[in-house]
Image (cartoon, rainbow, N blue to C red; front, side, top):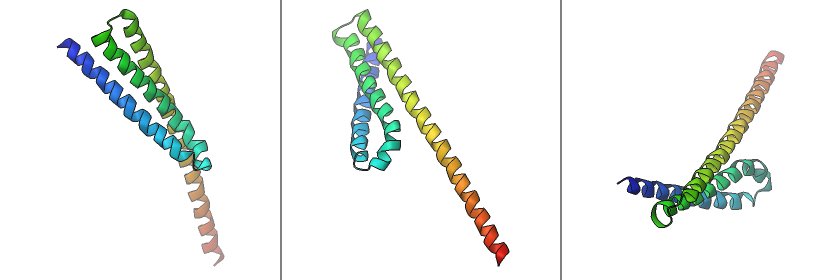
Length: 125
């Protein structure tokens, strides 16, 4: 029963990593058509691609460790790739958060400027 849980966990990592990598690559390919979007979005999608690739590798290693090749080194490699995957994914989330904060601040500044201009127009009339 315990081995079945590990196998399911490995399959989940493998599927998540495979689908995530596929869609991250697809998104980056689409972004290459628009250089102005690529500059900002690449900083978000590249860490997602790298982390999902590490998740796929860690899932493969986890499956291998619990089905084909049980070895402490395989388990250690699984732990290392999982850690790297989570770390790189966290970098992507932090970059996204910073980009959203910068966008929100820029939007608020623009709205304040519009409000000031509207007030000046009302006062001059």
